[in-house]
Image (tube, rainbow, N blue to C red; front, side, top):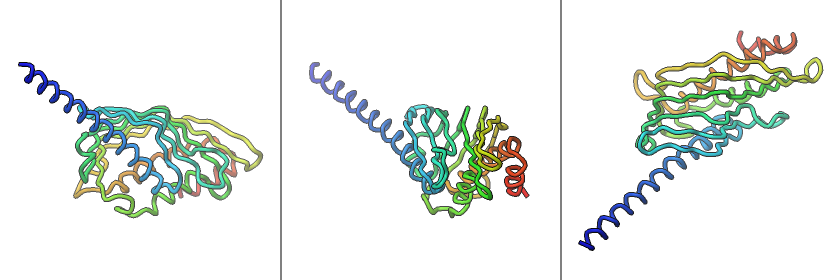
Length: 222
């Protein structure tokens, strides 16, 4: 009987160890994937403080997500969010196609720094658009639902005198990213999200900026 207890205890211990390994693997893979792919796509540092995703439900949170500004801009970040939630299929992390049920981003802060005729958001977006499918990773990505709400844009400009303004921006809701005919590369899905966020940020700056700012940013929508 004692031997049975030892065997049972050993099996439980092995299971717990394997569970911990899977948990750590999922979190580290997601964290490094976001930072490495994000940095290559934006051309600037993308960092994450921590990732916590359940290996059972696939639900979790990503904390301290930040996109640094390109060189020659004064503000530290172009985009940051303290925490957002994610739900995915855990085992898909280890496959060639990552399946994400939803990404819910609340209260992101976007910083638009205008230097005529350019601004930081458009500089980042241009770099994102220059990346070809499969250039940063061979993984495919599907996101069933993406939502961003309660976002704000801080506009910084020295045009017409140094000043700053803050405005709220419209919510973003996207469905079935990466679905359709054939698989879609991770880069293409990220481009779609980045373009929508950038457009809302620049529209917010367009509303709050002075005439010179409005003229400069409006050109981006022509």
